[in-house]
Length: 351
Image 1 (tube, rainbow, N blue to C red):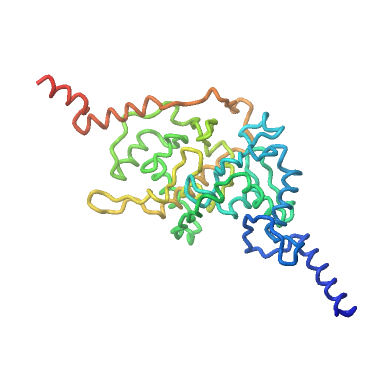
Image 2 (cartoon, rainbow, N blue to C red):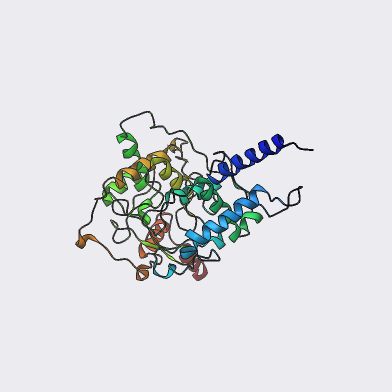
């Protein structure tokens, strides 16, 4: 039998525990996982995961349903007037992730996006929500797609040591990033080129690449691409446009190394290392940091305000198919290698 003192102590402990949970005081290293409502051994309590999910459902209904929709499909009442459109949680494609292009993000990635918002979109930062509520949203939005249950957890990308971290002067990193940007990575195929054509060819030659005879038109502008969900993606001009996930060098490294799911931005961490025919190292994974510093330097050149004449209105009419310059480069490379294979076959048939 419990005496009155035992009952009083138990009641006090339960009350303190309740208010700690309500205040969002949960261990910071806790990773909420998706769970299913299941009665505990006592017969009436539910598990922590189920409680978190229910809290996430209620929070989502208050703050998120207007844009992302009741079914999490990105078709809320306000979505019709938004560009870019709100995220569709049912396909589980999230752009900003610590995992490779196409893989599911980590819980921390989702939490950070909810916390910090996405610049240049209607997604605001939700830092005012208690931390527990933000974690509850992470748990709940994962219920909209069965991919979280069907796919194994993929490894996060490796974060190599930053070779420029100890130097207060980042000019060397920026110069190296410019060379990789315009040379090996050829980021100007989608993003603007920030160097003249002759300079780009100099970068190519320095990395053992052939000179370019053809370049796309409007080389100093970004182009529009089609995402995997058939929507238009306006590739950012780093001197003009806001970057969704931010401009810290760590965030830029992540986006460059991991790629951006649903877009043409590839995973560079697996292909940045190259060697010459003689076996000399041309580029390394450390060059991903150089790229990050270079892109960051470009964002710092963005004017605080644009004049009315400098504002460009972009819409779906900007859809770009394969540019003519791609075919021209292909023809040029084939001629360097000895001509077109089809023409050789035709000549053999005539003989």
